[in-house]
Length: 416
Image 1: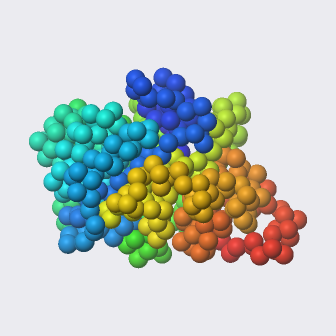
Image 2: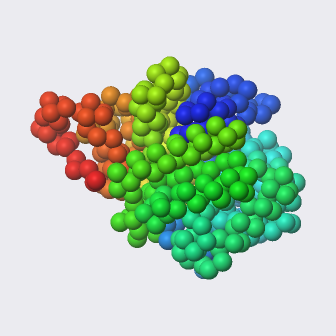
Image 3: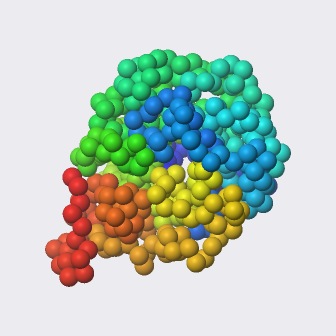
């Protein structure tokens, strides 16, 4: 995640203790601020069910009504939570499918709270009634992320169900009325790029404090709309719009928590922009970016996933590669297996990445971005991230360096 509010506008936000190793920035009593990003335990995205009441075109795990999975029983799920708490994970993020369709969700959330685990819910918002929001508050849910991908019909087209937008808006308001911290989750595609202005207007009108703009990862059903991914030029346009809007909100006295997700190149782009605007601020941002390490300490380090079958993956988009099964082995044991080849590679990326990423002068800040996107596009997790929209000139890849890549077959053809 790239925290635009923190990096571009200098606003302190609740996740800074974990994202940048800053004490006094959202950590709770007993939570240890990591000394180094490489020491972080993973936030665990748990797809607690594959069942969903919507049919989102970009669903990364192909969830929906009647979709079968090898769900863990309530007792098995509690054993997983015991393990996660003992392992020291900073948060369990209950996702799906639609997690609110799992009957024992709040029993599990309450149990996690007893163990001292932070709990987060990622939902489409359509089932968040006032009673559900009150239960979230009563069980101590620390944050609820509600997915919206446009205003009105644009969102409903994404979600595959008419009326999904209006129901999600009611869910947002119900969370706010119950005193539950709530924010938006949005996936950037060509369908909604033109809608960013309206989305920010909605953000401001509804007095929402947090929003996460995800770059598309073409996994699951997301493969079917891969051609709707932003071009490199459109990615630059999107980040420019987001930066401008966050700056305007900050100048208007609004405290925000705006992030972009799944493309660590955004941090480098922001840094290059600051170099022209405020060199001193840029130097401070470089320190934060390099402490975090971008993708270097994300998948397989600071983020992990348990899917609805109980299978463990380096992140929620890597469903085609399994590290282990929590039906058979604790998550902590799977995660600390030093012989697992993909985990080993993800934790020593510098010796594995190829092509322009290997020679990029910003590697320390970006870390090669999202390895699963490289795997999905090029068939190897060590190729360049195809969503990198920085030019060869911007990353310092001159003709001489390109000549160095050619003999070893590392001149990957990047999309535009």
